[in-house]
Length: 331
Image 1 (cartoon, rainbow, N blue to C red):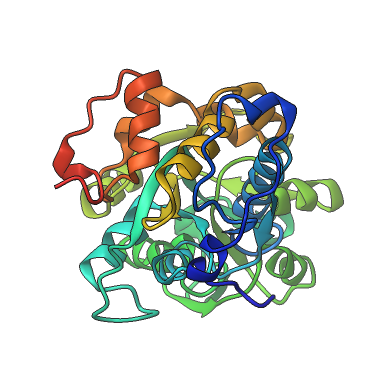
Image 2 (cartoon, rainbow, N blue to C red):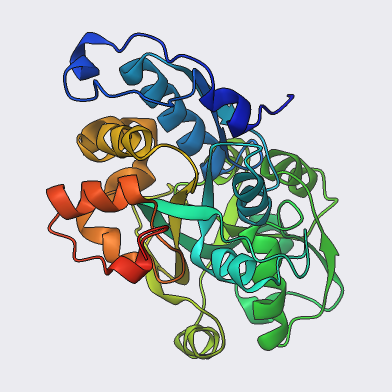
């Protein structure tokens, strides 16, 4: 896909609103005619979730829009910062690194033109193997195991290798899209996949339909060690998430946020946020992880400046108290 710069898009005339949102979002000054949401690889939750809300927003606001396959949170921060895509999905850890200038895609560049828009869901970290491997715990992973960590620069690839190293696991690092890694696991080319994605992860759901798998939880001690060393919190993957699980699986998780280029018109981002946050049932219909896409989770943004349009929506509709020095351009 050839990305369109925001400067060019802003000069265009927006399409006519759909009937449902015409009255509520009549001011379309500077709105683009089309938009792109940076997601991640196919087979991952980011791709399903991001493409889904892009289509929903496009339909409701009468625009042309859709999701784009990317390398995930780190690349999305870069793409949104530069304006190569208008929106993206990221995770709090990669967002903080990008703002600090330690994003490996552009070391030294502080990506301060990517703004927070709305809370998505928590990303649990989980390990999946074939049952035939005999690997049932983290300690069972043999030295030199071939571990797939997802796309290079993704949340999983950024943090999971460090987590496994902290737990004493020695491994060979492999990267790829989630669908591709799932195929490699089935073909015996990988021993383990270390997933970091909203649950249920499409690639894991597909795997358990096709073969017998183990979804490995952390022990209480392993979980505590990871929480102490990394920007994550405790999490349980419900036993209803996958047919393979017979009980909740102990994990850790990191919050995800949708992001917007900070230069997008306030009224546009307000309208997009309104579409997403005003009807959670529609979002859950896109992906079950959207159960956590709720207004009350606005406070889970611990790293980024808010886009003015999103800050106004949460202030007016969710009782949020967002300080002026946390809103882009307000000071």
